[in-house]
Image 1: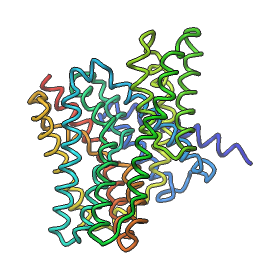
Image 2: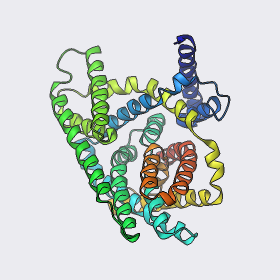
Image 3: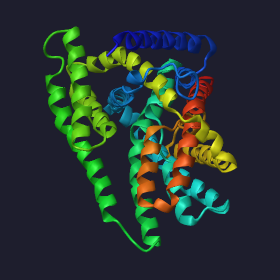
Length: 387
């Protein structure tokens, strides 16, 4: 293997990441959007500059980066945060998921989709992009009640989305005259098993980490946790997002002797995120965005409106401050890999709808992955004006 092109490419991608970081600070544009755009330009849809050997690392980088994100999001669910914002986190996350599946499904049905297909696509619309949202929060530099609540919502809303998706698929199968209980039991196994795995790693880690020496050994411990969690999740066919979130939640609440594991992951996370987002952009099929036409635009409007309504309703029920209520839905617009995963599962369950589901999901995910982080940053900055 000729290593020179690989090393040169990685060096160039890190320089691109540094430039994106600086441009983001000076223009207030989301770093995620800049990195994705660079990936699109450099990837197969653009100049095709990235060697296949580097593109082949995408799965590894995606799993590693997203496990780190899940670990940090779980770490945001401290006892103090849950005590102060737990009601808002729960009600906003549930309200957004419910409003999204109901309003998107209803809107697509009124536009001519069959009821079953509309319900499935509505369930897929509940998925979010934790990595993009978390990075936008970090880039904003804000650490207040709104961002604390937002981190909590991001940490659990995909769990509600998966549960809703499984329920909708079962309902549509019954509407079509057949059921597949393996899907429901499989998703229940994935959710429950992922939490159990997170507990099995999290409780020993909460006791053992940070007891050797300060500094570098703790960084090694943090990396070990990330790779063990993601590796065991993949091996057991569980969700590394839910497992990583569970590990983070347990450590932050049980490891009273230190909080440094989270700081170490924050320090090493960005290089992985740079490569992940650029390669994600390189893998995006931008022609899918053009192929979905007006129905894709309608779906994007429906999903955006439903999340704004759901965020406002949940914030009202949860007693969030009035200045924050309009902005939760806007901050939760990013959508990425979880939606694609749901679409693939739905395509297997409903082969007749597979082409429509995949084209619509992939096309709109491209748009939400690029535009969504801008909404997150804008929402955080709007709330800042009222703090």
